Length: 556
Image (cartoon, rainbow, N blue to C red; front, side, top):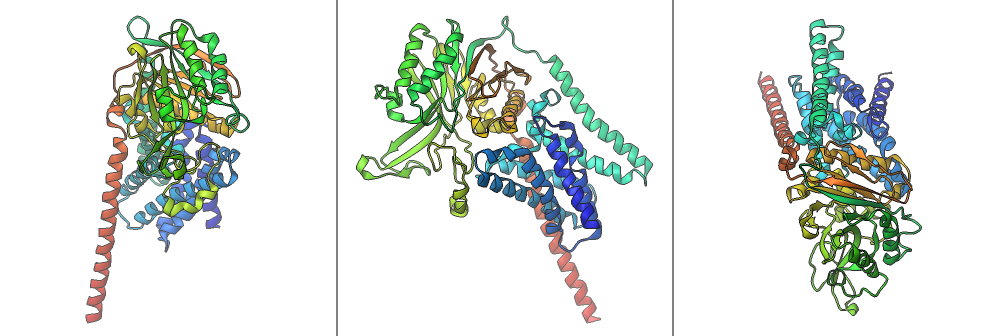
């Protein structure tokens, strides 16, 4: 009977987390989503179960599988095997964090140490998930509020980790309230008041900041006229069947009606030039007579009548080397006259001066663009998501490079696709001078599912964190303009070939979060390390004390 009740409580946590999640979730359910699972943890601690790590891990694994599967099932549209591997592995990692916490609770330390320890462990886990090879930050708790950014305007100070802490602390206070609801009226009143204040005060402060935040305007702030293109190219049937010239012709046919003498920038998606181009030819302007490079000539034709026009678009680029220039450079047959080749997923800025800048995607999708820890996880290669194009690990950039548009109209940062899920990484473009941000992506792989909407909503968080306007160009839905408060303008529909245009304002100020990045996560990572060392020391002390007592008893 106990097992069944705990199983149902674990399932309830998974369901509540799913119901909290965007795009159609109720974000404030997250303040109570962990309560059932924490209650299970209380029972396990009180019973002093023999294997607290595995007991905690087992029950929480049920919660996290439900949460992962119900929230990110859309990966299945690309590959069933990859989706299963992602859901099971991510749930396993989460449950291991919970299991470690359950093991810590078995030390019978003061009650306040339990919530502090869990927040430290969980934030450390999310921080790790942002920075290791198996990175998948999609379900970091702070992302829950991406659909209601008016309540988290203080992300400009804390970043999304502030949301993670907000959620976890609320759950612990709710558990404390439930524990004392019948037994101690005074404590329950204090807990209820604290819970209400913890939830309401940050939300109210955020709403005040939202309503009083001064958006840029034509009278006092610089701006650029931007056209965002959504070309709606099918990634399965068309993307690699069309030449780059055909892709460019489609882009220009969609953008053409919106381009005027005042247009400064045309922003195209990640897959604008899908067929791989050679870097040297691309930069030097040679080989334009081929179908691969002739798309640039089409841009030139448009620029002839719009001399200040800039194009930013996604391209697949390769570079040849006579030595192994990077870890991802792969050896090629000597017959073609080179020794190594590297492939990149790039954003490119092009204007009347030619290619004036390239940026190579640095946060690569595990199993798609990068094989994580190949010596360990090489067996997962068969489960890799097949998205066409270049196979194997791609090269990355060492710096988050920005593009200065012709005649200094603006400095634009252009992260690619998955990179918009990384707050600190996104902020590096701004620290490097970006006055406005453009996100280019190809979300068409997943079909019309919550996946592309969730990805779009992350850009709202990035706009608030950095206080930068975001121009988002997706291959197909959702493209939009997002202002510095996180409000969306002219969001496009999925599977629609269209373009949108708007005047976008520039900003040179840096938010606290932009300057300092994920400082909260780093603090809790250090705290987690201290907690682990303390737990080990405490355990050794208990063992030595036990042995000493046994020795005394034996002597007696």
